[in-house]
Amino acid sequence: MKGAVDSIVREAGRLDVVVNNAGAFKFAPLEGSSEEMIRHQFEANVYGPTFVAQAALAALRASRGTIINISSAAGHKPVPGGAHYAASKAAVESLTRSWALELAPQGIRVNAIAPGPVDTPGFEKTDLPAADVPALKESFKKQVPLGRMGTPAEVAHWVVAMADPAMTWVTGEVLSVDGGMSLT
Image (cartoon, rainbow, N blue to C red; front, side):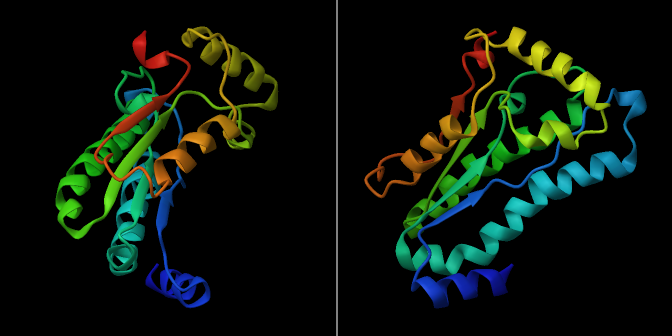
């Protein structure tokens, strides 16, 4: 991680924003959750953002930059059959708030975006048969008061907004961008 950050700083001259967007999700009930499945989700969703943030600290300190973690509506809403994914995203939200307090004296802001279901190619990468993906998407739509899945552009808009250097008075927030899903 440190090598990647150093390369960016060499090439761009500074690092202003880190977006921890990589993640993994797999839904399974408790009884069907394997150690490998649980470990993979925590490695991608909790350890990954931690190690990226650590590697970027010096550069972010120098630029008084910001970290934006991508959580999920599942991070603060119960998900039967998805407890381990939800727990990993709840951890992201806790890290966000803790890091915001820890890093504020160094001029680094830390926030999170918590999307609801977003129509991305990730659905095609699940273990579900391709024929079952439309039904899964429909089930998500039914959980969203606005009646649809979000788009990557809708989430990206808020990532850019939270990264804006003019947002100097916002830190430790988890912004739900979920079509109202968190309200239900």
